[in-house]
Length: 162
Image (cartoon, rainbow, N blue to C red; front, side, top):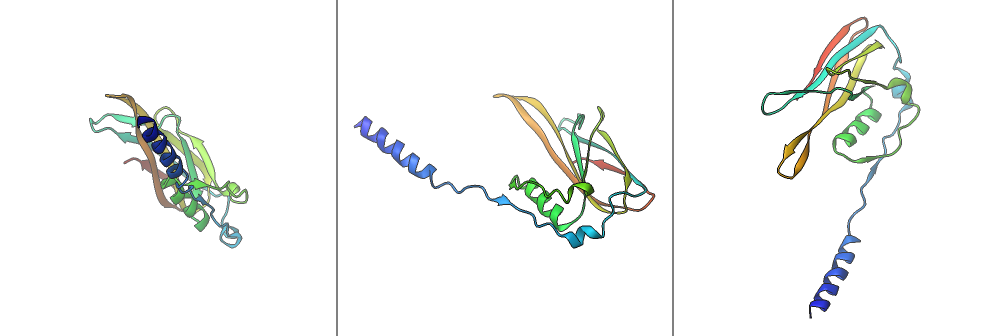
């Protein structure tokens, strides 16, 4: 009897596993006309710091965090929202690459982008650390994002935190 029950459970779980819907792959449409009006360089500078505070008040800096910086376009907004929702993305369109930038934050979470064109931008990065839990180490922190406008010649200072 136990053998039959075990076989039945194995068959049922195998059938149910096949019912799991595959994760949808998000494809963001690239708009040549939207990008045609954007500049890849300008005279502005964006400086910032990325960090989070723990419940106990300790500050955790985004040391070594990759900071992603991109103009606000329908393409980037779609990709950005998919990342926030932890959805799978198709490979990025290489035509958008000249407009996007990355840098790595220093040991205090500071970062800088120079020669930035005036416009509206998305910026995001993450602050991750591990903390003890009853089951070993637990990953803490997460992604931080912002949307902001920078003017030509401006030195824009931003703080990325929760």
